[in-house]
Amino acid sequence: MMQKKVGDDELVALFPGEPITHDNAEHYRGRLRRELLVNRCDNCGSWHQPPKPICPECWSTSITPTPVDGAGTIFMAIFLHQGPLADGVDYSTPYPVVTVDLTSQPGVRFTSTVVGSPNEDITIGAPVVLDWTTRGAVPFPVFRLDTKDRAL
Amino acid sequence: MIDSRNPMKNRVAIAGASTTGFQARNTGRSQTSLAAEACVRVMRQCGLQASDIDGICGSWPNAATMQSTLGIPAITWSGNPVIPIVDHIAVAAAAVHSGLCNTVLVYHAAYRLPWNTASSLKDPFRRIATPGLTDPRPGPESMASSTGYTGWAARYIHEYKVPKEHFGLVAINDRSNAALNPAAAMQDPMTMDDYLSARMIRWPLSLLDMDVPVDGGDAFIVTTAERAKDMPLPPVLIQAAALGQVRHNEEDQTTSLRCHGQQVVVEALKAKSDFWIEDIDVYFPYDGFTPIALNWIENAGWCGPGEAGSFLEANWDQARARILIDGRIPVNSHGGSLSEGGTQASGHIREAVHQLQGLAGERQVPHARRALVTAGGFFFNAQGLILHRT
Image (cartoon, rainbow over all chains, first blue to last red; front, side):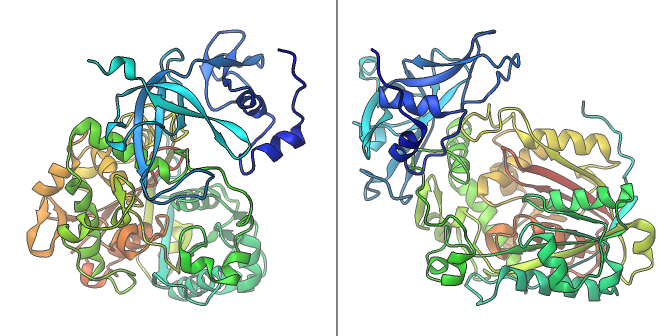
């Protein structure tokens, strides 16, 4: 698993337009490995998102960006009929954007799109799992409806 | 933490408010030009010379530009707060009350910008006035900024099982009120069919759920209650102001529709003021997006969560297609952000001042004495202001 750490200049070049800072750079480095990283406090174990330089619960500065499985439930779902230009996004079909409650990180949400399902199936309350596509030259975290629960 | 301490109560006044009026087209003028026109109007209205101003407060242009533009000789305080505009009024009032200065010129120019109208993007001067316009942008997979209201609109519909028509009542009320406001950008009548057939932008919100980008400016004079008494118009006293915010204030991390900045604003205003909704004459819930107004109406206590649409139906003035709470309290009587124009609440405050000064023309509520403005949205900009006239 030894990989050369991607430098700051290269990281910014790989994610044009993303607001990368000293506080969230590890999250973006994680994406390059197809790992969704969420900050966890080494002291009290609580999770927070988006990445902050200090634990909002206990003020410890010992924070570890930690891989999560990304499984969760759709909390908000909207459909963009227009929006920013982006590689692979075609608004001729309204583009879904969802905010997901992460099951294993209570109180923490992550926002992306849903792939692989018609829009009418993308509803608040639907279970999802994490998947990866590509945006530009880099992996991009997305959600996919969790079909194993759909037999119900 | 929220308590009744409010030593500024009734000690600071808004002595006057003026506007350029608003237009939903590119005016061929700069933001500084629009702000300056509003400033000159309000200073003349209040009988003030440039040398009478010793504080300046606004966002765009900054206070230094405004001072040099207006030739204001010397000031002892300035502020460049962020929108919406209760922030500007509140810090100006605090500066006056504390003695940092005596008389503050507060201004706000709404300006059509290249990121929200295509015609502005074609205007080279507006492109130059928007630094970073050509920088790479993040993709669409975000609830940040205005998209967040769409996300919470979807939540509102999901949680309360209400029809889209409930949002439409906010838009129709604004349009009906704007018809009587010469300063308003959008005055053509709007029916529910018009509302429901508007172009979808971000489901569930369509064009008529979103404030209208405009060119235009508002300006205010904020000074001590004593000084305001010597000016030409009746002083409008600032009873209480609040800027409410909760910890989870990122758009996609906000806990719920019942736990955000608006609840803090309401609790603070109630603690710090002598009256509340049952005693007011005009109400201004922010309406930059229609569900914001519904949520304010619920949080202010007019009705329960999810009940705002039904409340508006029950308090609907059929004859004029507008809201009239208890048959007497108009809501956003100037036409709000959706029809007067997207002023980031400067229009709401200006209209509140005009109603209390008897300057609201055909929209005037007889003998209006008390106004409530609840500005801003859910996340990091919920604000409130209680004004009254003795």
